[in-house]
Length: 452
Image (cartoon, rainbow, N blue to C red; front, side):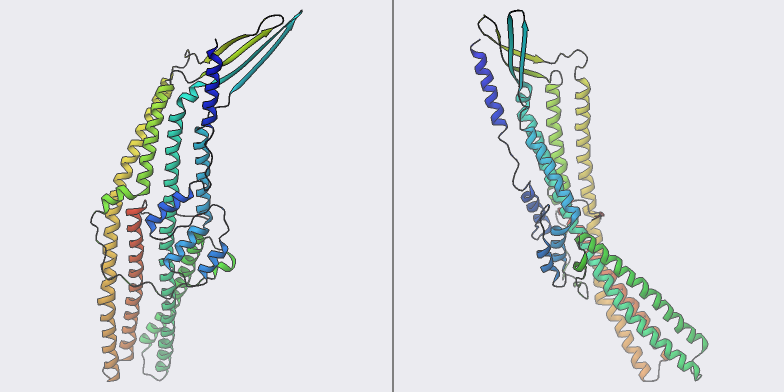
């Protein structure tokens, strides 16, 4: 009997050591920032609730670039901060799993006649102590998985912001170009009206010029709305309001790179770099550990033991121990084991599906990247210069009285259409470049909606 109090003391000491785990200072944000920074190629400053208005204001004081837009989104997006708050929940569950259940104290007092009987006991969760390493390991992997998921959301926000940025710049550029078209159409319509009055212009040609002017008005209205809508999408991703919305965008899209990227080992890189792949692997590992723990505790998962003593009036104190465990009469744990096995296989299949989608998305994204690059370069190097050369030749013929005003105006419209298409192809390339980078380094290349 003398060894029982020592055993209880040893169990109490183990419980104290298990309770030493504490919450981290940043809740895993440093790791999330590092993972995101490695994949977006620029600093990723993440915070849950800090006020970054001063830093955001400094960045907004200059015309936005793709890099500064991403930086503002990571600093300021309420949607991202809400997602990062989930890290705190997962970390709390991880810390809780590394702590034993509090001991139970028992006290009983019975009095009858001239005698008083007092029972005292303290019991500890032995089953919890034995499974503590496994439970802590499982939740630790869940916490690592949560970090990967949070980093993936940050990378996805960066990708969405870059896409919205290029769309907004292209829309503003197209709207400015549409205004130039409207001015030219107004001038040609006025010229046609004057020439018709003096009999130098047919009613058919005058109607054509008037129709072109009306089409130009419609296109201008549509372009202005698209510029507004794309700018508002960017504002939502950046998390801006009030005076912050008065930021400045550049007048035109960035130039195409001299040469396109080569694919090389992009598929293999995606399988190792993509955050959704790493998160899927962590989930499978944690599920495998949970399956092993369920099998180990499926038969008996309640086992408490501790020190007990008893004292009665006029008798010496009696010492002993107390053991409590679950009797597997109605539930032998087979259903819990079957459920854990099904969850493990579900996790395995999800990981395989993620790998299949990752490889496919990289191939698709690269095809889009190369196609849009070739088309944009073709418009820049061939179509637009050719249209300009044709316009110069038509203008020379007009000055030499060899071409009519109608031919000159019709050629100008063709040139305007080619320039507008060139803007669109350049925008499509930068969006495709963003999707390729995301497909290789981040996660799904598909655009997601981020709400404030």
